[in-house]
Length: 541
Image (cartoon, rainbow, N blue to C red):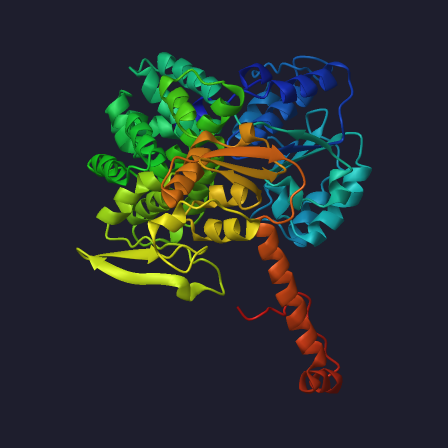
């Protein structure tokens, strides 16, 4: 006898065997027990969670011959149950809506609706992948869905209920099937390998359950592959080789180096991973999962792994979210990159480049031969950059202090007197986007030796420690003295960013005014009855 795959061999034959869909099972069982059977159902859920299986079990419950009434537990022994199981029942119509989606196939199906059941109580129609039906097919189905004969039950199974017309949805009882949790899947796989007398590692089953992404069918298919790959057993190393996964310990270390801005060691760790011949898209998925766990740990402290706890304490929530966004963006573009390893490498480079601790990733950028470019003082004073010095093949930009016409160190020790001087000093600082977003919106109040007071709509306790330390270090570097910051909450109007916004508004108004006064442009608009699109006028920098 030919081998029967596990996904078919262990397909549930009654509601009790269904895994992870207790809410749907309860609703269907109660409706049968209370004799409140709906005329049409929609089973919605991702692949491999039990839509078709539940439809077949429901059909057996409605037509089981073990009782004079529908039962919530089919006997699986009578002729009706057996025929539905093997797909030969004349009262159970299963149609693949993906391949038979046209109006002709629907008309042929609906012609059988008025006919009485041959041997059961109900005629059950299952339309699998119902969202693939054409608009004409849905329209033809509407009347039968709304007022079917008393002996007819429709079941629409779909992975995309949003594509089903609302007119159809309103006529059906929709039951949403959930993806199965990893723990439930692992327990299910454990029971199966025990029944099959197969030696299996719990960690290996955990990897299979995780790779299945909530699908029972995918989990059983992967288990079949793992058994074949392991010559009749399921062990951790063989499953890792099959799935192309690695131990997350490597990834914890690599992420730790990224957070610390240690690019050299981060790429050394990647080289160790590369020696294991992994699937790089799976590596990136694992990185995304780890960053997700770190974020949850920071918010609700729900993780028991020491590695996750350590990483959660090591990084700021804002930077963790940035790493997550970079990883997600890299994964969304992974399929278009010609070399998977390079796609992962550029993802790491972006993470290191946007590290808010600029001091920590400076060594990496220098060792890579990457020039670090200082921010110009402002758009109108770019010529104030000092001479460029070449030293050992590295380019070093010396910036002249904006508040003075000389480059002497004594000028840097002067006390800042006005917000104008402060804004020019701020614009000369080379700081991260995180620091810009915070301190660019604070107004200068006072400068007393080593203390600078700023004011804005922010509480000092809400500023991440590393961002505060970064900006204080930038100020200390400029003034050549240890600088501490004092923040006051209040109204501000002369912050660097607000003044820059005012300047941009003036430029924008001037640009729009010049267009309005341009006779040539106005004549063209009148001739062609045209108009200028909002937001299309930009000032020249």
